[in-house]
Length: 227
View (cartoon, rainbow, N blue to C red):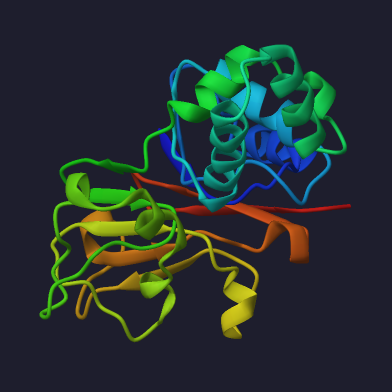
């Protein structure tokens, strides 16, 4: 089974509870649409767990991108790599001591989108033409994919046969319930991913204590709530 989520924001325990709930195993696959870090207290612990999974597709969100911009700025002004790593550890005040160069390299290697036959994943948004068609993601600037909030608007219907998975904006910020929100195509039944034109994955974990995931094969949704 394939499970999709976004914006776990350092909530290590809540993420583990969610994986336990769906009985996630080595035969399953996880796709995380970014923002693994910041806000929660276990950013690096969660990131290292996700990086250790051999069956996960991980995307950069704006919070990983901001960290990388900080890292790149440091590297432009020094060749003291030990000092750079120390500064990078300080970027994550709660568990930055766990950061190492391998994890920094893994952050830097994160892609900004993922695409298959029936769906595509971005953190925030994508370039659209005048008729709402998604322009080639390989040509998009990273900043647009991690910052642009165009998919969050409920009235936006992307002109594509693929379902778009995205996060970045907590659903509660739109006046919606703190859960995953799928958008069904007119007349569709809802039991296949092609029945949906987009799925809003950001449950606002750091605000609401809710983390959810969407199962691709049967379009079931699962949520856990912080104790």
